[in-house]
Image (spheres, rainbow, N blue to C red):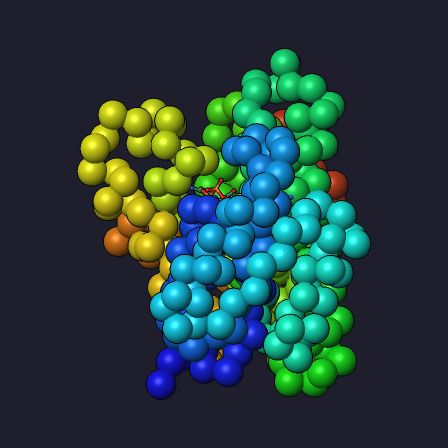
Length: 282
Ligand code: NAI
């Protein structure tokens, strides 16, 4: 008995890295998997069917069920076709994992409009395009569903040189919380993972490069169990949560509101300065 027996899962960007690990883990737990991947370079150039097809072949060789899709998540039509592949091949969709991603790092002063647009299109619009198509299909079928988005510490905490990526990933976090609200009455649950993993996306970052153990201790296979958990009944009706996963460490990211200070007339800027410690106290 697998945790995802009979479930149909769409995983975007599953031709490499974390998405590939998800696809294998989901298939191992009995899910039928749509392996989506455009097959481009790390910065989103070009395309190659080989990436997604290879993962499908690997899953099938292991006795699992999978089908490839090569559309880009970054257009509304692409999102629809990706979800339609699940419906056409396996009859419906139970699970969507929005994982596809690219990087175009540049400091704010030097970032081009193209670098901004490309990153926001894949991460933020891509999450919207696939989620909308999946949400409608899940709602109309009436059997609920589980959506897992991909955020990043770059958006939740901040990271130098990633204004485009951080903004998109913070957008994904906000989107996750909104979809959680809207999904409630349809039993559609939406959570997010902010991973840290050694992949082609991160292999040359200072925190990974030069650390020979990073490829083992921070491999994508460390992230996959959290995605399986969130895709399964084990997660119950949990929704709107964001889990950080880095190697063997799993934690929750939370937005906090301090108790604050209340006055019955408009504050002066000087009063705000004077009472800042109380305003910011937990
Ligand atoms: P990766 O580069 O190994 O894999 C990303 C995959 O997405 C690639 O196979 C690529 O072809 C695919 N892709 C890119 N644009 C696409 C599009 N428009 N349509 C369909 N597929 C597309 O990267 P990795 O590390 O596996 O990243 C997976 C996700 O995790 C991304 O969303 C990334 O931003 C996020 N993430 C990764 C972290 C890490 O430490 N590796 C840290 C924080 C977030």
